[in-house]
Length: 292
Image 1: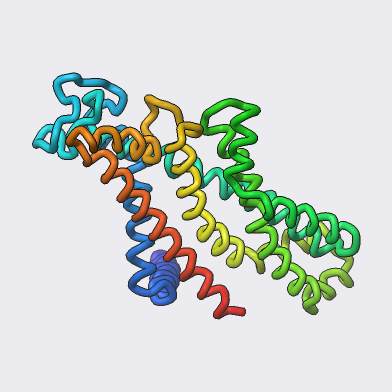
Image 2: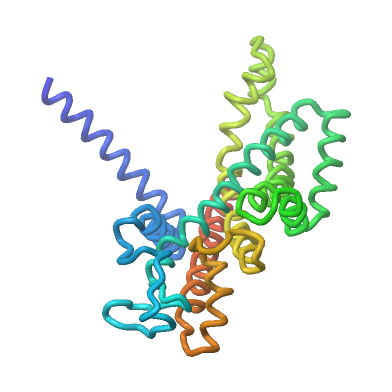
């Protein structure tokens, strides 16, 4: 029994190593670097309460606009708050908002796309026209509308941008679903008496999953930019909450007074995260294209 258990565990471990090796080869060095950077940022985000040396919202007038030092590696902002701590905590709002935007838009967009592809006819025409209308309106307009209704804050911006990103996902998924809809395995499942819902969930959706993931990852980078830009305008995350977009705005004032590290740190992190997400999404898209 022990020998059998050992062989099973060894087989599972070998499969896991083979899967990891294939993933590394498919992503390439640049993709692996991008993925590693995102994992590092995610870990720092989750462990911010432990890693941050100071309370990010606690003012310290003795450290106001202070430069880099042993106690404060990136100095202090205009209120003396530790910049490094605020960057760590700011990753939470900066990244959680875009992730929520993409999750909402992916769920809604995928549902609309598969429904339109399966039903066809008038349903497909109505969904396609709706997507065209949404696609024609800039995302920031939706964000401004929701902010006007709900007031400044992260909730309204997330809802507005989720609506704006829905057609980006739905258009790609609909095209792929139309191709899958006409393949023999779908007809075979239909002949076997399976319902449309079962076919879509158990057969169509799993085959579309790699494409959906690649599209969602690619859109995530743009969502980070949009949310940071809206926070920079003062319509998203509100002070004193830590947020990279908000820190770029407040850091510009500090830079003119001799403390550029706040704006530089937040701006550099936004660029690095967005670049890593776009590279990873591009690699996943190429892998999916190669499969097809």
